[in-house]
Image 1 (tube, rainbow, N blue to C red):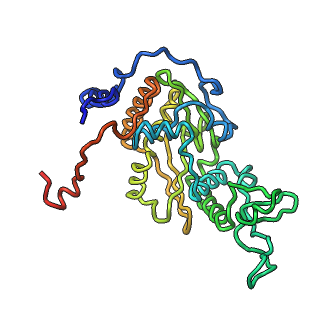
Image 2 (image 1 turned 60 degrees about the vertical axis):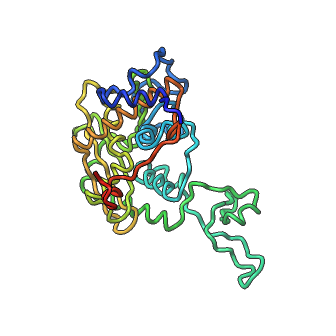
Amino acid sequence: MGSERSPLDEAIHDAETADPLTVFAEAAPEHPVAAWPDGLPAPGIYNGVSYEVYRAWPAVNASALKILAHVTPKHCKSYIDGKLDTDSPDRLKGRAFHAALLEPDTFTERFPVGGICAEPLASGKRKGEPCGNQGTHVETDTGLWFCGVHGKAHPTAKELPEMLTADQHAAILDMRNGVFSHRVVALLRRFGGCEVSAVWERDGIPCKARFDKLIIDQPCPTTICDLKKIQPMAGTVEALVRAIRSYGYDLAAWWYRDGLARLRPDKKPPLFAWIFAEDSEPFDVSPKWASAKMLEIGRIKAEKAFAIYKWCAESCQWPGYCTDIEEIDPDDYELKRYGLAQ
């Protein structure tokens, strides 16, 4: 087996004995700063930008950095190229929840409630009766709904990928009511704007973020709020700390604050708050400030991930898990369990 290490492996090795905030800095090749990408607005804070437009902006965001921090550059590149965009009912519910709270004027239009399939059954005991399954296709002229099977028989029926079931819609409204009834959230709702987009530059790399809620230039401290959907009984401190670590929420929190601070260098750094909301009964809410220690851990993760991103972008190399077969050891738990710990 060959033992030659790749340039990225060398950079990682060098970084282990160097200042962790300069990870990969010396390994990155010398390149002139690229021109500002077409389609990306100048650095600044933007209101009224749709998510679809924001998503298309060619700049690195916290989602890409979280992949770098937890998996590999190869996976990050697939995300950047739009090849990891798999959907699920849970993600649909999350998008709808954000819209219900942050963009109520467009919520009903974007997330219609699906009706019941009206196609008469052709056989069986219920012959002639409506199918009754959940509709996924609708005829705009008649308002009739059809399920995925019967919808194919109606060329004029349009499939609505952002459709909610009646139960999902009801749960989202209950979640919204739970959030709005919390006294701290009620106070935060009085100020600032929702779904605010930002663009900035860092070390020649275009960067972006989208704040669920941004409170600036108001009679209260500058604050970034991030809305998160959680399962019931997952709002305890212990559960939230695990979620923050597992999903990279700390990395994203620091990234948002750093981006805003770069755009407003003459202002105090913003506060950062998570609004954790349960997605079913009892629809409780657990608002949490990101502490200085939490943000410092997020900074370390984000700095390292950004350095990797910069190296990969400049070298046009996006390595995967490994380039050779590697030996794997049991973790400490297994070693202790079987009496092999040193």
